[in-house]
Amino acid sequence: QVPLVESGGGLVQAGGSLRLSCAASADAFSSYVMAWFRQAPEKEREFVAAITWSGGSTYYTDSVKGRFTISRDNAKNTVYLQMNSLKLEDTAVYYCAAAIAYTPYLTLGREYDYWGQGTQVTVSS
Image (cartoon, rainbow, N blue to C red):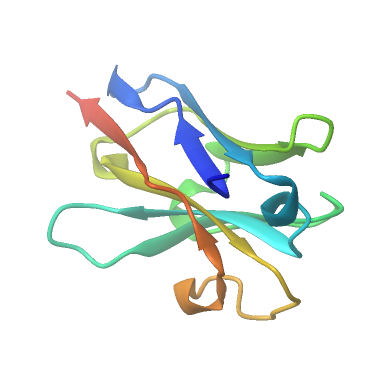
């Protein structure tokens, strides 16, 4: 079973909204933290948002605060990223990731054990 599978990407106009979903296997979903990263063309992968297993703590990179919301539905083993007020600079491939053990370095990709295949988000003017 593939640990993480993203969906929900697509083409949207600036100012619009999209919701990404990450369906996780039971093993991946029981991880300490699940997160979203993104990678734009010719740029480094960057952290977007994270949520702990309990859902009690969430973290965001500054550029998406107030616009994006990460959440999880434990009954469905799914993590979501609601993206509102999308900007051109949000265009990227978005990846879901899971870290099995506790880590204080939530923004570092190397801390994560499972990765999805990615879903493209394109914001047009």
